[in-house]
Image (cartoon, rainbow, N blue to C red; front, top):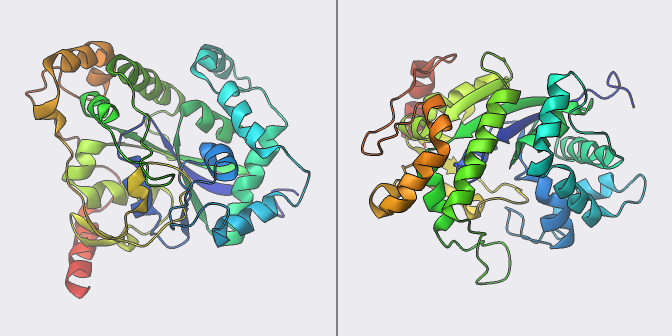
Length: 342
């Protein structure tokens, strides 16, 4: 089918590294009219199809009426080994292949070689848009090579939100035990050693900078710390980028939102949070993180710390960056009015 008959699916892709606050941002943006918060779609083939984790609505993936309808449409064409798609994606997008991807991209060639699985990936986003009526599919996958893969697909119109958080905070978060809330009772989220989470933070965030430049109208870069300081203004910028009205964001007050259930297929356990949610900084790392771990993270991530305006000395708070591109006063007035009306 041609793009004239079926225009590309508009996708807001979250890029960066894990434990940066993307899940709650996805939940909030997913409340916008015409938006569908899908979770981390690169994991759908394994955590959804193969392992039947819980959807954000609380139902197993195989029982969720939304995903049942979506997958019925995806499966209406050729028969595919769907769990194998997920395994092949992991292999095609692994970090060891990143230098080759970046070189091909710099030479103007296709960064990720085409594969027959690409049709299934595109079909998935088209099925989500068609079955839900969504004008915007929100994908929290974060992995830059997966974003590259989406950018290459003619059936996808890609927007990018690069969400960055102080790497000392993300490293500390990776060390903590946290129930998954979407598998068997007692299952815990994956944990990472400090050196590994720091290395991944550096590689993935600097890769995002290389691939999606400042000044691109389809790219928005937000720091977690700025988001928590001014959620209305920062999320208003993101909403405006994708053509949504910032006044439609679900703010009850400048630091509180009202969340309905989403159908996110994978992600942080707080994707299951609904109702009234208060946005507050998670900065336990400032008092609970060991000096050794703090020093190690600072050393490994130093190039990125400077680029994203984080201090090397963790006793110093990061400088607030000036907001651009949205009338913050108008959005703030809308949030205040909503808080009074509800």
